[in-house]
Length: 187
Image 1: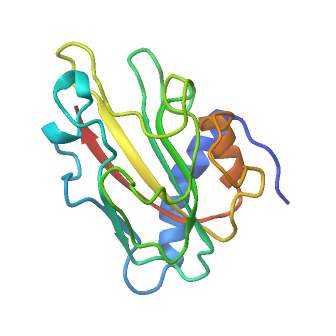
Image 2 (image 1 turned 30 degrees about the vertical axis):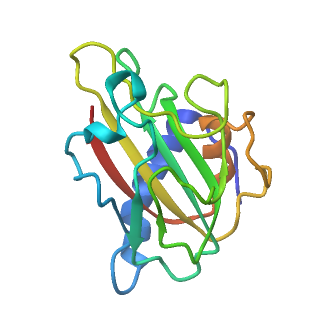
């Protein structure tokens, strides 16, 4: 029985799903990597926002060990700004991507083929990727999570949409996540 959940419960459930779903995955573990990012490392200069001298393009991503039964993929890149708390507050969204075909194994730098459908940027002005542009000297941690889904999110449109924000995305993938894999970086 599917029941709607609140943001706090939703984040907790999605975090726990990695361990639970990972137990059921046979063979190679579902793993998200990037040829440009080291998990936990610093964001390379070319991937920073244009204000900070970068190209402002999304990082190249690759994955292996897709779980059996995967019908679609979804991706969320987020960051919890100072003063917000994971599990209580919605994070800042930097990239929302859904309807990624299950046979896709990578997204090149900048997503030039427009793989999948994109939601609202961080500021809610456009659809697509928002490059990290951290203010001041403080270091911020960003997380990219790839979700293997047993069905495409049926409550999201089949096109880019500024109306899709983090909460809409989390709600749409609820109950369809088979497994997930995350990659973090600092800027």
